[in-house]
Length: 133
Image (cartoon, rainbow, N blue to C red; front, side):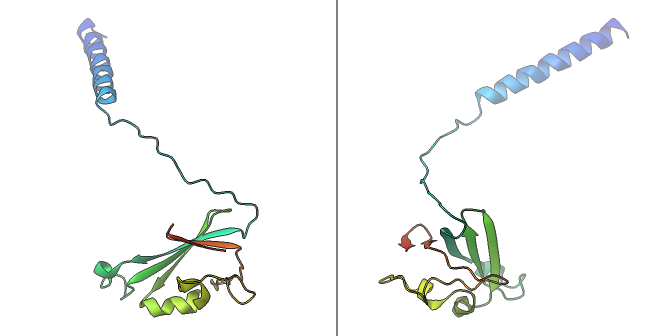
């Protein structure tokens, strides 16, 4: 190698180091925020459910306007079921879980009817607003 070629490599390596240093100095600060602590004792202890609105994309999604999402927080297993109307949620999840007022635990309540499963969770967390026990 010629001395000029070696010098070019050295300069290019130094330039990349300089660029990395500049990017590191000007990168946004990592913000550590407090997270909600969840204590899960068994597989069917806590489920998180939510309904995602996809109305602007209904034409591309075969008229599916909503996505029902259910997360098993112990195993991190996720179900995502497309729905055409909000009333179809009653075919996916029991009506006892959909209403918001006066949650009471009973044998018939708290039964999520998901495809290929028959799960009775002890606690259901809805959109981090209300908690069902």
